[in-house]
Length: 379
Ligand code: NAD
Image (tube, rainbow, N blue to C red; front, side, top):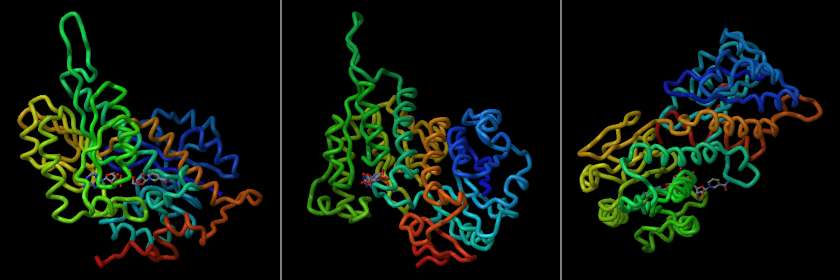
């Protein structure tokens, strides 16, 4: 069984889908691991380290993929890059299918089995395979680090002989995995932290980290969580009430970290240009949702801008700014999933197509799109 790993081609992508540690473990499962030379360079994994773990390093992409039964990636590869893979090869990574349906169709046409790791069910058994959590956790941390670096003042309260520095006021919008890590990180740095979310369950979690919860807590809020634990789109009326509360709160903040996402939809707009203009010069907004369009109206995805003295950081790939940690965790997520797909005795692929993890993540099979949520034509 050959497992191929290509270097990531997407602009700004620094991560890689395997680490020397996981290569060793894949070998132990019976796989031959072939990696494109230089694939780990930006994560500080050298070709030598991969080779020492048992991988074959090849410069030629076509040779890397040739005959592979599994192709691992961080981002969805181009269908053309998969030519020569074994028929029905499992292509595993973050497929980002919404809005990219034609690219998914191209993978179906290429005859590969595309598996979207971001669709992994959020159940206990699959926690170890949850790329959204492993990467969002790092993004939340990194967002605060970048805010602290761009902020012209200290985070903690400091009482010095030369006078007192007041602590930074940090507001975290969205208290999922990234938001909770942002709260914890900002608290560790000594900030005074508030946070909001549309999911009622988030309140207790924010408070358990020492943050103060800020939200309009009406009936709609109390019923706002979907059965999967995700946020759902709120009514126009709720959004208006929330915006008013947010507006008055934001005006008093030094740092705002936004993390709000709704699966399959553009990021909700939470901060208007007007709200930004109420913030004091020197304030910083870090928009972790920039890649999905941004939570702030003024965010420019991929850029750091300044608007009337307020810095707005809109990097597209926050976990990729911690490439070694991000790749290490991502690689372990993939390894854990692969362990369920490989027979222990046979040391060959043995996919159970009825397994709920497989059913939830397989997008294409036998030349067709098979996932119920992915349609070529909008519904
Ligand atoms: P996400 O990345 O989809 O969204 C980030 C946060 O933004 C969410 O908390 C969401 O409620 C919030 N949000 C959406 N719209 C908002 C708005 N208008 N204003 C403020 N906040 C808004 O979320 P996530 O981090 O992937 O977590 C989603 C859920 O999954 C959470 O309930 C989390 O606890 C749960 N989860 C479960 C597991 C597991 O059981 N294995 C693992 C990870 C996460």
